Length: 78
Image (cartoon, rainbow, N blue to C red; front, side, top):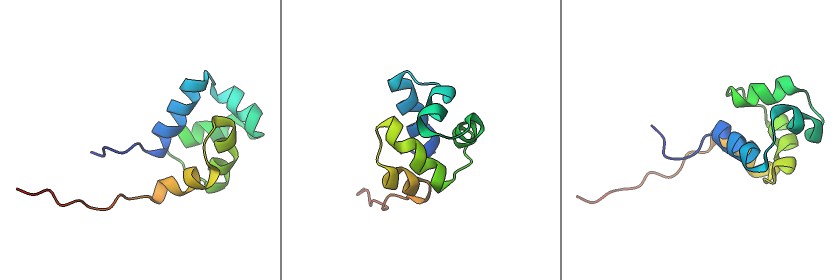
């Protein structure tokens, strides 16, 4: 179990916060609804992530890099 948000979580939360459905996001990003649905199912494509980032108010480079991100391991004393 991961404590960090996955790409699907980030995109879905941003959409919800903006009151945006897949159709509205696809219009703003200039891509098809199928591509948005794919991202929400976990089918990651860096180009698509970059295109949807700005309409969601997110950094395109950071969103595109998120699928491969792993936080540093932390030692917990005790």
